[in-house]
Image 1 (cartoon, rainbow, N blue to C red):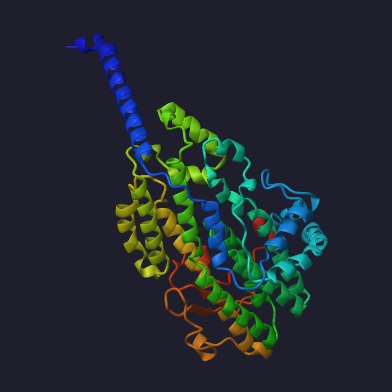
Image 2 (image 1 turned 60 degrees about the vertical axis):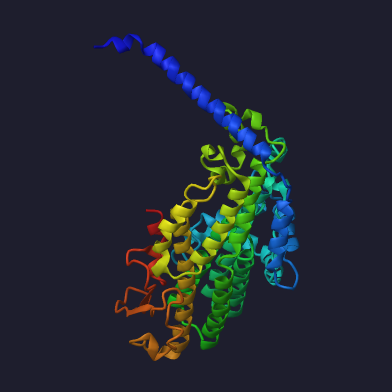
Length: 469
């Protein structure tokens, strides 16, 4: 009955032999197919840079100004993500409580001293944000592993360039938002509006870029700036001219961000096409495509986790076809443009078609639907919150001189202004009758679940004790 146990070593040897034969066949067949494919060489770095320049405003590019701040003022190292003492102080603001609690709380004194030390940077920051264009180059010199990657013909190292210098942009946005709070707290309206202008202009510049990570990173800057602006609109009594200036600028900002929401899609498609070119490149050691050697090649590429994620399951390389891979990427690009221009009510209907069309592409480097569903939610929430903060500014203008909050938004603002741009429904408005609450009302995004943190546009400012609990 158990005689097969004594024959197990022979079975194991047989199974092992079959596996080795299959791996050998897979490696041989893949090598044969790869070497039979046409191998046109495209300079995707040049194409990405040209694409970035296409969408720029006609006036000057702000990159030379930012480059001087990043590499000369901060002495920033994009390989180690570190800079000098000035940069370190700037970075410390992001982890401080400068946006929480009362402004006169002594626990903010250290953060305030760092802010004061950073004020000279705002002059150069204003110079940069006054220029409407920003074309951050895709430059392979930003990659720490360029020399090793060149051994395998991997030119995609350039795609990490905008990401590697993203941190200084965010820290500049942080010091600017903190300076905006400082100006509002002493009712220096002109300076507060100048900080708002520079903060919004920087985000608009980043939205011109062709790399998804840059857009996601700028969302954090938007949230920081708009949340502080909401707190100020709740806590301060502003003159109508101040509220009107805020409203007018936010309307321009809302329009530009909507227009630039999908700027990254075409750039990401080119990055993936570059991956395909690398896979079929002449310098890639296809004779090393047995399992162990292929994993070793990927480990050399480990300094670039984003690109490794694009490739996904290496098994997708077997019997891959270059033309089919490029065609899949082009279909993916067109599909995403349709998705991101659609309202939330139909997002879920794209899930199954996306999975069916791109779930098993020959070169498996297209993200699953779950990622895009989250990005969709983030980008459209952003649009709703921009419009909602503008409603707050319109209300602030209407409530000037001690007027009572209206029972309905439509009593003081137009029907078009009261509508959420994403869902088309009216913003949800509720008056608060609580003396302990500095807010006079609560404004909600109509299409987000009630328990979503971002559903309430004007959430209360957290105290320092709440943040350190």
